Image (cartoon, rainbow, N blue to C red; front, side):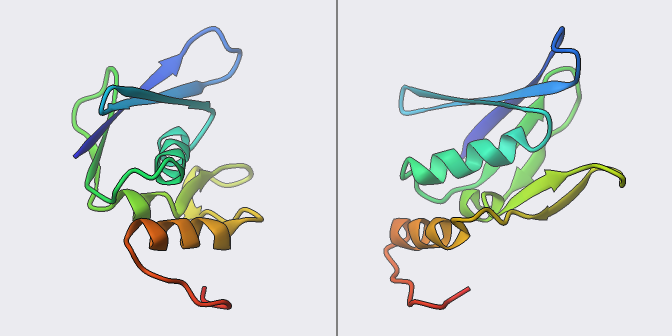
Length: 115
């Protein structure tokens, strides 16, 4: 199981969070205003970390957020703007590349045109 720690970063003028974890002695870190833990999940998938459960704990708050799959977590993000913060599908220009990397990490093949 991967444990991600989410820490608010004071003094940035706006609320920025740092998501960190350590896997096999390797330290991973991402700082973002929203969705830092999901961005970190995408970086872990890109680094070839195998699919496994994830727990996200925020410093100063009780409890945790749990995901059964690192790879599934990587497919989502948080957006905000004129609406309250909400979770949505992550859709970058290279979305298909992420799905391919996830499939390869699972030992699967992805056909062209699969979404």
